[in-house]
Image: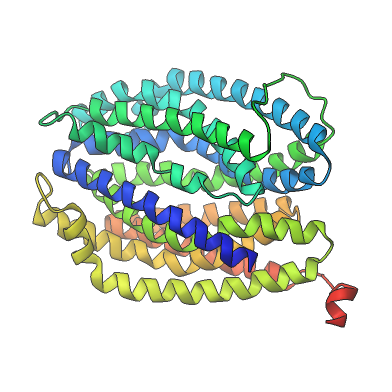
Length: 438
């Protein structure tokens, strides 16, 4: 029931956030259509943000169980760890920001494929803002994990701030088809999200402000660093899927980046509202169940939820498959976005939706293994998934274009679901005495 309650709250906030994302996409489609600006935006965002997003993904999974444990160990121990964590995240964020700025000319030279010269020039103008957002994404990730560990889910509502600010900048700059409305909206949205999440996390923990401290005195670093090491191996491989897709789709040309970007964002709405709501609510609960010593109960909960989520994903797939052209038309077809663009995006959307059942099913199993600190096993599965994705992209993209890339993603999540379900099913766990008596 704690998972259900948390999932309902997360879903409510995610729906609001996804609506904000939808109106942002509608504004961009109306102003820019399928154009070089959108190509450059999609490419720069994916390539520049993949490393901080990877670190946040790995850190969130391993950090939440640690933070749940710290809730039981006292305020002083928790504050020491959080202060040190913020300091080192600042340091890592600044390094990544500088590194992104420095290597960007080589990224453009070797990965931009058939992007037009105009789109390439736009990416060079955009990279300054997206390099800065790398630091903000890391700070956002840490404070989101703090709130999730407390089973507070307001952070899912604040995810919508960058989208809302992009929408506002586009609407407040009529007839401006330059990149700057998108850039100013991105920067101001991420900045406000960072400030609010930090404030809310401190407030939720009963603190006024936890000052960063550059030291390694907390005894919980050793466990966290070891876990992060394993998770980063798999997370880097998996998170490179987005820039890898950009590299493959850039070879297609003809504004394929923009077409796939619109379709991917619609798939993300379904995934975000359905699977992410349960997944985000489940990890702190499963970690708490594990901490209390009932691993068998956590396993049973996760397997039941996983199968139920696959069924829910199939339902969403069938409905959305038939409604795809109508959805794209309602959301995007206006202004510079034509009926021909609607047809192309709808076709890509249909193939992208094939990942939904498997993504729904695997997410809760990921939370189960994370709550049990099985990070080495998770890293191994992630590497297998990346190999499957690369192989399928290599085989399908040249012949089927965007649809082939989308099918490759579905194959990756199918492989992921099979691996995680087999592992979870075969976990050598026995029911606790209390559970057996029940």
